[in-house]
Amino acid sequence: MIISHEYKFIMFCNPKTGTTSLEKALQNYNEYNILNNGYYGLWANKHMPPAIAKGFLPLNVYQDYFKFVFVRHPFDWVISQYKYQAKLEVVSVTTLVKKTVSRST
Image 1 (tube, rainbow, N blue to C red):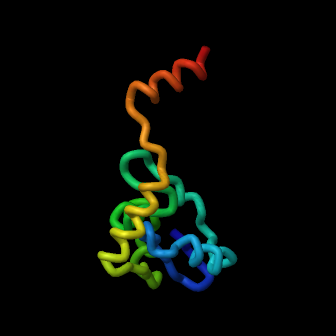
Image 2 (spheres, helix red, strand yellow):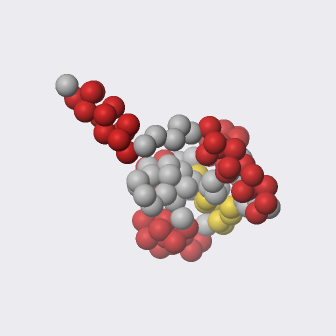
């Protein structure tokens, strides 16, 4: 999420829609980076849902600023998400426990 107080806009970031490129292009306008922390199990970094952001931001900021988000065709999004997930290592719970125990000893 990018918030510019100077230009009075909030850009929300949907996953798998090219937001990293947009963030790089708009990084000089980002004046409020504190809300870009994810919460495990709820949302990833920078992908805070607008309804949650509304609760964190001052009411006048949320009401008065121009808000926008980019979306992707659902089929393209599913393919991109599938390819992304395929890159991730799939680990069983047993393997995860073994790795965790071995690191702590």
